[in-house]
Image (cartoon, rainbow, N blue to C red):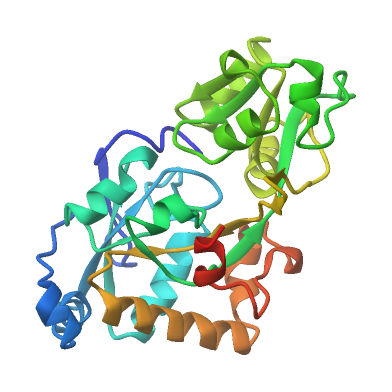
Length: 297
């Protein structure tokens, strides 16, 4: 995250090349029309515009110094929605914890925030197939003085863990033995980093991708990112599969998104979109990595 990804509806950002900033509108999806192919997707095609909720988290979606919203999710949205005949995307910077609520309240038509697919979230929204599958890591002081390498280590060693509000890592930490009082939540990456720097926490737990990006902003300041690892919760590996999400009624939009995403994957065109933001072939989804799989947990 850059400045703050969790100031609800704080900033509206127009993703078209012509104008970097614009106010975002609301959609009025009719579930019955959507079933007949006349809902959100058709409305967006007719108007040439769709509204998408983002959270200000680098490298997934963030506002750069020029005021342009960029990141893996915005750049992917530009390509896929253009292929669907929707040229203008109005992006709304949203508090991460309010993304699904804002979607279902029709403040926007889709979520694009590197949000992991989880069974709990699948109960409230319809996820597209993942555009990436990521592992976890810790940011720690250089030399890793606490010896944190695996998901179980913070709990075993009684350290304080920094996580982001609303993110899955809080649950991972508690389920792998970290005392509830030792799990410290922060509004964004910047405040978590300040907490680590001040010694209020011993590590930050996020995806390797997020932490690698954060480290580039603080080179030479005495911190490092551990090797990636996969938490195992209740006997199941917890890979973070990031995807766009839509309202459950918007099946036409969901299916159209998945079809275009599939074309990019099959043509080996997905990685070049995500690569500038630190993603590698190791994060590319496999043929069995579907939304249905991750919704099952």
